[in-house]
Length: 420
Image (cartoon, rainbow, N blue to C red):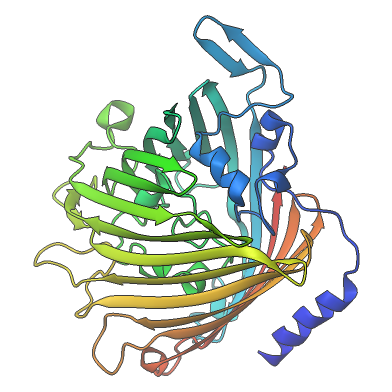
């Protein structure tokens, strides 16, 4: 841990001037704005303008020309972007190698080339309709689609009312509509070590019900003071696709989310709660999954000493599974699984270097006396050039669930992230 702290300190000392970083450029091409217009500190953290752009369904246009006609208004270019991640992870757990030629696990140091390699299309479909398509170009089995949603948003003057059909292979019911950056939605988190810095992600899909797969409809209402989202979904991906090669199941699960988004002084807040309930088929014949979880979250973005600071706190819990069906957020555990996280992300050099720290207090849901699972995490993000960033995350683990011989006590991640 001392070496990681010294490495981060050295990075601070060595970086006086560097270019501003931008995020996925698909929407920048449509709006004609730098990505920093929507993102605070670093990608994918959203600022107030970014939240408004997302809530409006990705429809805002800028300098880009449009093709227009009766009931037609689309960009003259289909806006696209690529996001690539290359990671190296090393932990201090027991090695799984028997022969020197066996594949490396993280205990031996693992290079993950294409941890993510996604093709994005997104933007305006009509004046009040947008879309986002994500294709995973390195998906096992050759499947391209990883996620798709099409928000249809009506401006009612005092509020925006929307309905968003969606499907995702890994991002859960929150994929339909979410505006925070604390990890309520897996894709919008301030640190790469998501389960160490987000209580909600610590619980996410522990039962393996599609590993975050979800298909449904999100009904949302949003204004300057906050948003409400009621989503009907099933924990299955691409339901009914390709002539029902993927079975379609009843959407009997419900996700309810409410959050206030006030500005207090110069601090932009997101303060909210969410609840999952119900049991639905998960697209596998003869099986279904419970979706039961509650959470509370807090986010504040402002400035300290003229530099941006984000503060994040969450608490999430999931009850034990019902007889014969696993709760996607607790699996086969025998107690309530729960976690509390608090963290902060500070821009040492605006839009160039951010450093952060987080603490997690968690219970795995396992046997009493062997369920503690705490973590301390340090983070750094350094932008080499626009849309190319280096990430370092270090997590140190403690608690009764980590006492077994060979259990992981620390994890280090080095990552190159690039978008263009």
